[in-house]
Image (tube, rainbow, N blue to C red; front, side, top):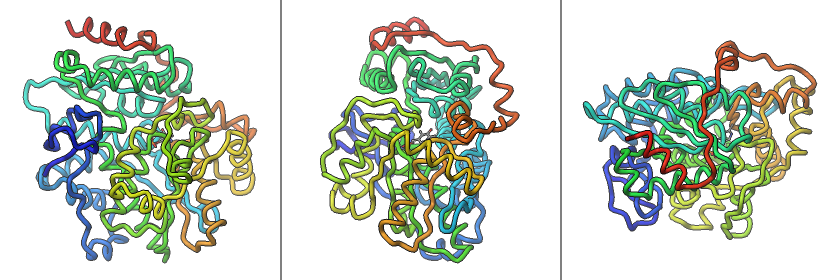
Length: 435
Ligand SMILES: *Cc1c(COP(=O)(O)O)cnc(C)c1O
């Protein structure tokens, strides 16, 4: 089984190489050469399978030729050890809650699966240095996912003052093999610096660098599992027409859904919902993909001006714009709309959403209304509202209870190194730590 680059200049690699390299030399993105369709027998029994059983079957179809079934089963069951329920919020509108993992956000799926897959591939005595840019949730999930994994050091870059207090605590209080760098700049600056580090041969060889953000193929694989599981839950309720609305920044989560669709999951439509960083919704409307500097919004994990998974998104449709727009509809919403809808839904139903989830809710609701579709709308709830307590609590006029596993983190001491948004400063720091 080989992986190729979306730019098709770099050589094809094995899964192990793709997982450890993260990014091919030609600056494209690794893709699985084959994404097999699952047999109809799988879909027949789907409603009777547990989430872990579904996850194993999907993983086994994707990478079972590389990782033996018994090993893969251990990886899947260890990584996917929390549920992803589809909760009915209104008639025909379901919240797919992806926040029941350790950092209360969907990025736990990717980080936990990736860390265990890397652990499986790492040979005796080999060491690895993970370098990650985060707008908040990737970093905390990676910090938790890799904490104390032998042979792996983790460095996380985050934009100063642009992540929530709880996120910053989750990023900066681990110690041990996890280091946090506080960058004087935006998330796009952090991402640019990390990309440059991977293209810097001297550095990446000295450190044995590897990435862990949403460009790593091993994060996309588990992000397909919960789409199947959501479909299974709805099918049990007699619904087999589904629309998924995905609140998007780098579009890794949406690509997970597109992989599920490529494997045969019947999805009527994907709604790609963003905040005011609406590069992809604009592309879907006009055919023009024009990255821009990001703007800050309440849904800050989606403040991305140059969505890194975009080439994968189009690749999954053979780079045909017609095909992309046949399956994906774009929506985008302002902070004002987010505030209004969080309050409205809480007052009407008691259900409390984080700002990212609110955007997904509006996308699903509006798509169903405008298209007249009778499908079930499933909006992906990417974070627990308590992670955005300072935003959500004033909107609903109520406190949100902090789960015990977060309370403990809030009191720990912050440990972070402050650096300018400058690649040479990052390189000097990383080299000095290594020597
Ligand atoms: C990362 C994140 C997103 C965006 O996911 P992408 O895969 O980057 O599109 C949405 N919501 C939350 C809470 C996130 O942390």
